[in-house]
Length: 254
Image 1 (cartoon, rainbow, N blue to C red):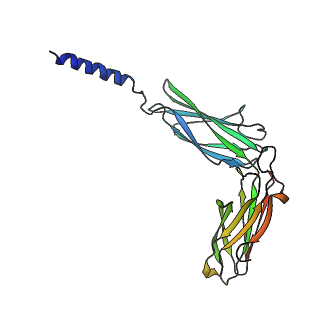
Image 2 (cartoon, rainbow, N blue to C red):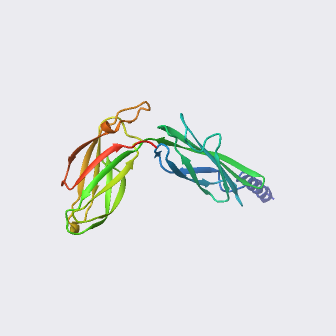
Image 3 (spheres, helix red, strand yellow):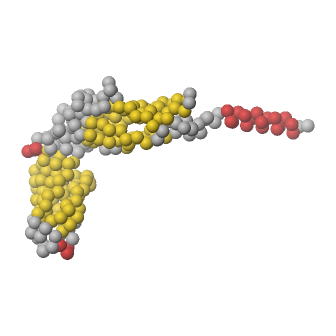
């Protein structure tokens, strides 16, 4: 006789547990943004949105995005005219254009997921630094008797790799220049070291070449480096052979 109340109690407990399980089983709706942390004034940028969670079933997603900033003139899309995309996939490519003025902007995204009468909404945002690039450039000379091909050139700022470029071909006794637009989003005021190097195959009669340049930015109204071309970079000594030369300058904003 005592077993019956125990069975009834377990049934009530199971009913309570089932009542708190989410109907979707996918968890809360949220989004993740991936893309460059810095872009040049007027430059277009692409950011990848991935959506997680939300209602289960044949979900229809509506994504709306725009940028905001202290001086968003020239930037797209605007808060007054955001871009909207609708699809059943969980990944979206969001195109933006940076404003003409240097600043930190915010990419703001609204996400809506709907299945029948069930609708879930969320937002996600990302900070983006709009900054004029520094042009890093190095010229390499092939002192060998055969052509060097697919030469990888690496660009370093304060010892950290910031980008690479490839020189397709350097003919014997010829020269080629590699250029990289570096976005100094987190560059502090002071003197910094830029090094440009290439690993050149020995069979082509070329050795590894390093170049150092001193970066001397000055603070601007945004409390970050915004120097003129003449006081941003001062070429320094070559650390290895004199078979190349390096330079850096502030690029004009678009």
